Length: 140
Image 1: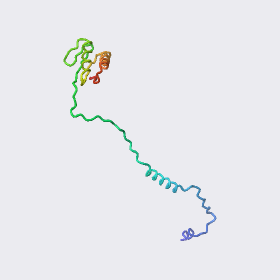
Image 2: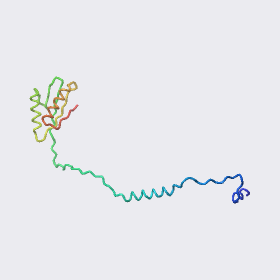
Image 3: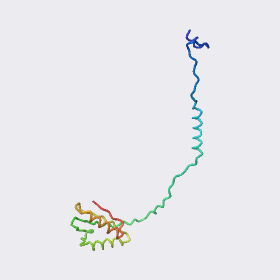
Image 4: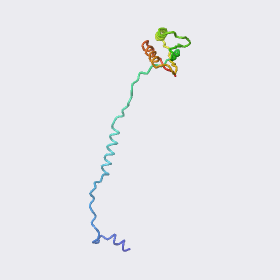
């Protein structure tokens, strides 16, 4: 009981130090004000819609399926256009030009053999591009 009474007594002993004043700033009101400002800012900013205008093609009711032509090529320069054998470069150029002139261009699947030099493949791709073929792919 003695401790309790000493604790409640207004008199202090000489050994107790004076409490030091609080030197830190109370930041709770500042945080409250900042939160209110943030909420007000979020409410007052208009909602911005990020949209991109796209011109999409219309749906086709009957899609035209292009013809697929397989062009086989080997290291010796032997060419096969579908089921036909191509004797030389002039005949190949004529077939490529005829394919490019069609209203619906066929898909050309170039199938070179594993030992075919890249120069042959590059020459055919350049020929196809020069003729205006747009659907050419190299198939392994």
